[in-house]
Length: 363
Ligand SMILES: NC(=O)c1ccc[n+]([C@@H]2O[C@H](COP(=O)([O-])OP(=O)(O)OC[C@H]3O[C@@H](n4cnc5c(N)ncnc54)[C@H](O)[C@@H]3O)[C@@H](O)[C@H]2O)c1
Ligand SMILES: O=C(O)C[C@H](O)C(=O)O
Image 1: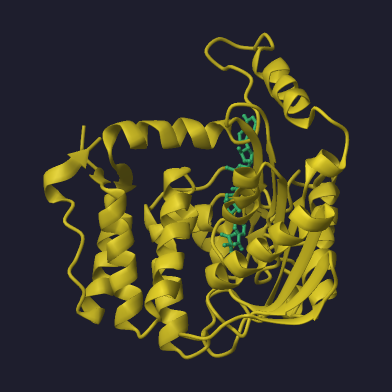
Image 2: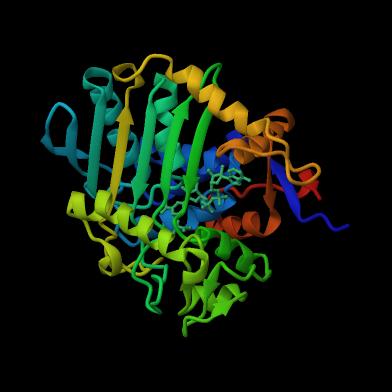
């Protein structure tokens, strides 16, 4: 069996990402915020949104379309709401600022609803909604993204993979953690398949004529993803509706770019001006016993008799826990060598010491 993966320690990947971002002039605290989000994506098994994406942020800073330093600014505010100008900073810098503002408002008045314009790609949406769990609150987060998804009955990409994430605390540190693209999959998963020279399952995307395709290159060059639910007959119009809902909360509410007016994915000649939405809800302002009922809701599902052997019923967040737990036990995250090789090539152009996977190869 060939060894195609390697085990890397969290701290070394964070440092590697940070050094690459510093090499292109990013402020140190901003580089650290980005490294934290990306490594959390990998820890949760969403390799599409971890180290695999580092080159995107490096290129955007190098191209001068994303700001290296500065602060987000609150432009309008009430006790429960805020409109923030992200000042074209890295998405995680805008996201951390907005989510902490939403949490503060929810602490005081029960709800905080904060929207940002002038933002950039922020990694996994769940990173921000899950910040609410530490305060025993419900968190929600949404972002629009570049047009990559074909609406039901269409063949032009007019919607991003516009993720939805909702996190809700249960008892003893347990939680519901829904974090999903509103397309059948995140585009990053198609990029990873292409990088690893593999095909994609039918039902993820289509070619330039709107026909189903299992060739990741056809989806990435001229084709598109389909909404969650797939075709019209399998309920894809619901995913299409959810992607539009994300635009209502993000691009439309925040006054940023939206839909097909957002720049093409990975284009580096203009700013993204993404819209994002961060919500915190404080259960203390609602019925008593929230955490007890949440625990009951989660365990009643996990304890259901499965339809097949060795396939226990899970709740959203469980697959990520299953990936995360062994990483902590092994003190390392398994990475595909092709991703490490690609990012080492990026690092070499920046004069940054490469990651050294060779003595830590695994199957
Ligand atoms: N920043 C962006 O622009 C952007 C855009 C799209 C996606 N993303 C991120 O990409 C990541 C991956 O998205 P995805 O849609 O491919 O994720 P996914 O399909 O792997 O998982 C989606 C959700 O389903 C849950 N889930 C999976 N299997 C389950 C099961 N058997 N039972 C119950 N729940 C289950 C997961 O816990 C998760 O909450 C997310 O973190 C998302 O935020 C980011
Ligand atoms: O942000 C995007 O446009 C792409 C997204 O990160 C995804 O992988 O779906």
